[in-house]
Length: 608
Image 1 (cartoon, rainbow, N blue to C red):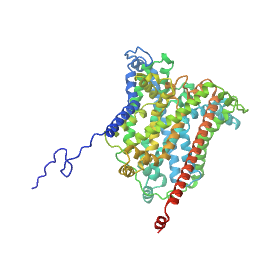
Image 2: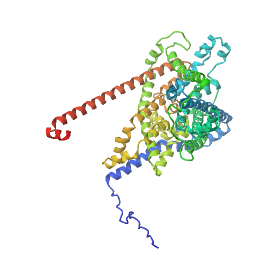
Image 3: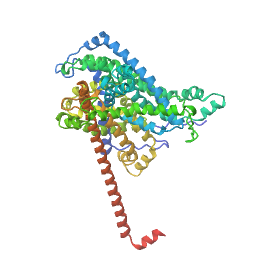
Image 4: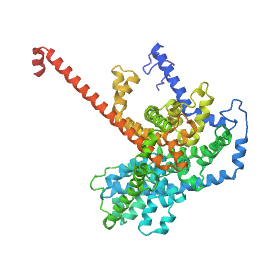
């Protein structure tokens, strides 16, 4: 019997002495850069949660002489409003989850399985609904169902439905759930669409051969096979319902409806007199609930047993004619497009040119008034800076997180993955409070408070989960062998990432930046806590106009912002086109110069 001796430590597989990597200045700088980057990443994602826990036991982040206290927990758990708000939030989240998933499943089925008109419009409409700022969307519906002056109310009254016109009011539980479902259904649709597209058509064929009807095959075979994707989307929507602040603040607070996010906001009103211990303590309650749900969502979306079979689906044969239900399906689609997208956009544009809501006269007075208001122009400038710079920072952070998800398998990659999900387990209002504690307790951090840069960093952290979902799929499609080839050719790690991976992902990165920039402009909960009178954004300004009854000015403000962003996007596109044309022209000139300088003998040999 042959006995294999163990290799002594420090040897390679062939028994030879393994060469240790020499310690060089380049290696030292690389390790130092990784350490600094890890510290910055931890400060952005992990430290705010630690400071939120710390802040629940301290008196106030704004006070110089802070003291330890349990008053926050005592007030939260003895306040009956806490339990009523938490119960209302749970019911609200369940209602929007059930309704949103029903709408999302219907549209995903139409897109992937039915041969009907206008089905190709479904995905673009859903993308626009997701990208539309939440504050703007809620404000538009607050105007559409605003009683006698509401556009929908006047339409119902004009066709003789007086009783329905008098009863229709979006500032109610009905309006709050309906408006939230419109946006949440679009998000759920985009999440489950890939699973519907990839499902094997053989499942339905086998069920039909066995004698099952199409309805029974769909509900008994196809939907159960999609259960993991549907459960993941349902959990995602449910989490969004628990976190919701903008729509409940615009449509719920005027009707006396309090959800948990607005309940926390009640503790934070009053500036220096705000009850920060109670707000922090109540925030920890929702963070614990959301953390459990986020972990469940990660279990469903990553690893484990899969019930979805991926197989070939013919582009033509996978679509079927709904038969007698064809026109009903088309009518339902068009009605949804009209109500969920066309009406809100039309209302915003129309009210921007109305002297008051419901007026028959149109003018540019609102836009002229805003252009001549200094604080509005300052808010517009701040929003553009936050959207452009903050969107860029978000894309960089999301790329690092996506790289950790796809490429890194060690402890460092796992840490980055887990840390990046911390903002997903914190509602925007809670994240703003946690980030406020973090900045004010960091040495030198108080100098950031009241500046635009705290908004840039805070909103970047808040939108990283959204950008990560956009970038991760594109990164997974790029083979690691391309980066390795660049490294073999002599490139450093960062240079290989920049010249190969980032270059190939440029369209996805630009799309993620655009989506994040639009989303940032409509976020209300984070700027409410991190902003100041000198760093207001259009979301906080428009919310103030709404509360003071000047909703038409809020609409005009978003019309101005949309025009400015469209102009900037057009200018950037023109610059890119000019740069590409100049580069191509320079390459052609260099090629022509090289050909003219090449001896004729060499040219003849090359041609042969």
